[in-house]
Length: 407
Image (tube, rainbow, N blue to C red; front, side, top):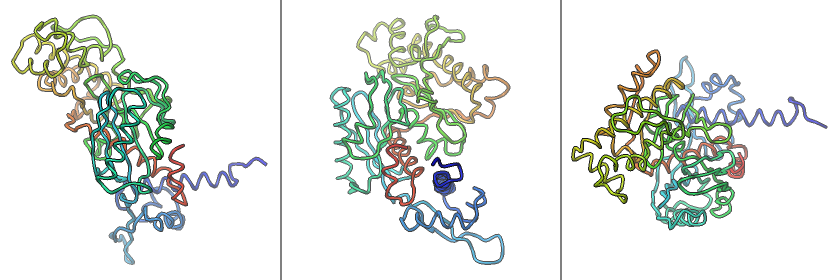
């Protein structure tokens, strides 16, 4: 007989949603009473008590401290998350290495390692991740059942719901079912995410975006990336492809030396694109010059290179104004290895952005520079895995690890 919405299946779904909402409310609030949870979620205090009891018994939720009472009577007990209940393993994959971090459920790093990768074959990356897991286990003493999940971030289009990598130009991957492979090889429930999304998540939890509900994270370097946070949640699009901003068309407002034809942002602002254009202005760079050599040449005051960076700053500012007009964020974070050139292009970004933003949308906009290293991207991946773990934490909690792999 088919179950209606009021049947057992419907009741179980409502219970699961209430459990998830309560855990998230405690996580967002830091410390909160059962009465305040009930008011926030429109539940009865008795329901909150019933739902939180198994989490307290398991040790995921703790009765942290006594709060202030708004009336005469017993002071409320405040609930908090025990973030050291379980630990997460986060990884950032790059073409030549991985950076891995072992964190608690609040993405606080307990250890970080960097492991070189011999080539970008999937098998080589998996082997490096397994090596990093062993190294971090020895370094921190945290392994086995204390590890609740693995989060992996990499450049490319990723279906976060399944861990399916549709394609990654930098890694040369096409249609890789990475989450399933890692789940089998590493033995942990695995979440795979686009790397810029992981960085945006990191900023939302413990970085520049923690006081902002809606913000953008823009990265410059080998490519041009975008992480979109709306209403406190990452926006990925239905198939994980949202944020491929570097592949949108770009046209400089009034270029000095930058090429005129309309191409993509990445074909103008990526490291390789800037080097290619700079060779036309400074032949001494040569075909084997590195991005660092271009930065060093700018530091000498080379007029042509400085004009190129001025054009790059204005192009970036104009492109950012499009994002501001679309999303109206309160914060834009600029990050990535391309920020090595910030002294030369950043002065041109804000004026151009404000000139093209509509209706004063840029007036109160914060424009911040991310100074983090690669370990923050790995912590972001671990944080996303932790968020998945907390979201699917059900009673009994021991099965959350199983649910996490298919949530």
